[in-house]
Length: 286
Length: 289
Image (cartoon, rainbow over all chains, first blue to last red; front, side, top):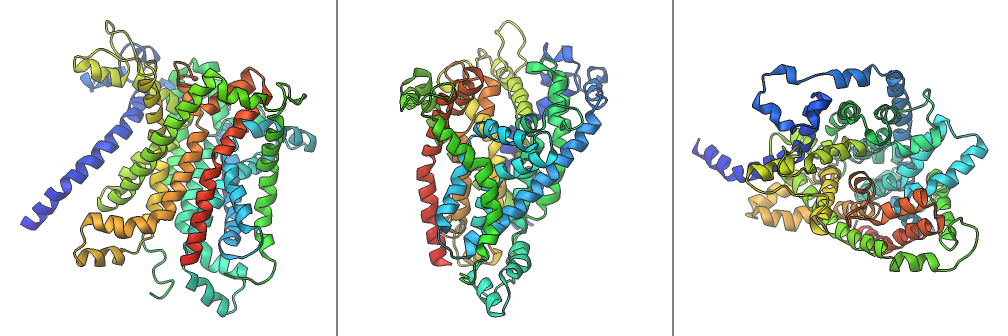
């Protein structure tokens, strides 16, 4: 019993620090959440925390902002479009990057390092600089306005990060793993699919999370390559049309921001359980 | 290391082809444009580069980016690493991680609205609607123009928004690496009487070094390109300009493709030392595994 109390006391500074950081991190979002339930007029008069002075006065809250966003013409279609853009744009770069990273980490060939360095250096190319040259080619090929064009564009923009992270993760796998597999006569592709990929679940999960939410929250790429027509517009585009130029109706933006946040958070929670300890345990002998 | 066959090209070809088209070709295009005039037609030598390093607003932008590089990178990686290690010891790890990760899931327009609420500034005579000034006034202070007071307060206010968004990123990839360290290794060190600090600096950190380097590299690249936050919050006014925002203005407002390209090339050059560091690191990794 006393041991437990001592342990709780020695750990309490840790808990205090962590809880303080969490509070700082969540307060701004909490403000947005509360604001999204307040009438547009109230938000400009008093701070969101003033609702706590009369927390049980329910008339100060409204779901009008959410109703306006959800019932907006074309929002349902936009949600489907967002999914249709995001899912392939997450899966394709993960596959392509994993293949390349496997070669960069475990195969020897001329120009390996320099090619890899170029790939990572491409991370720094500002997206805005690529839009016009690519769009010109897209127009010539008839790819602008097509989902395929957007999938490939997101793949291109996501590849350097995914390749870099995979290369680093694969490179850290123990050498014995590969040597014993090759001695047993396994081919490169067999080693990749049977050993490398299953052992890399945490890396795949982290890349999937980030690629998913970057594409999900993207406005620029969709706007440039897809155009603004309603049959292809994703949610970000629909919301920005709804909110208006320079965000005049930003009380709707508060509600829209929370609605569009929901799915990336679900993905995060779903993939979080793959960040587990000891995935390598038992794969090689001590 | 497997030396058989030529199949390595099959593995790298899809990535190389896609990258050549979407990033390498535009990059080369940009480099060529950086030596031309505003319409991209006449060759004007290094004039655009002279502009980048001598223009007053550009110098402010370069100074601010340096401040961003130092503060943003050290804070996101440091805090992310601390959280990755510390959260492993508490029972509410999942919920705490979700809270730190939350800002990453918000679109940058949403984040802009959130922080305008936090930093909102009104004269002392009327009620404050910004959280930070609400706190300041409640403690009897004068409201502060967080986004206006130059050069320190407003730049740090913007950098903090960046830290708020990107710490979750570092935490997630560093946490994945921390979970990859066998628990038995840490336990046996503790049994041998090592203090928690010794365990961290002698075992945990050396094993996580490569992932820390990845996180730091990613943050450096992110911060060099930092644009959204400044664009939404101040658009570079009040001495908060950054390089990428300036590039965006040159390109889409002033329609000066030559200058915009030269700015992009400077960003590209700034990353070269980081790449050399990474190359050295990968050689070391291959030597010991």
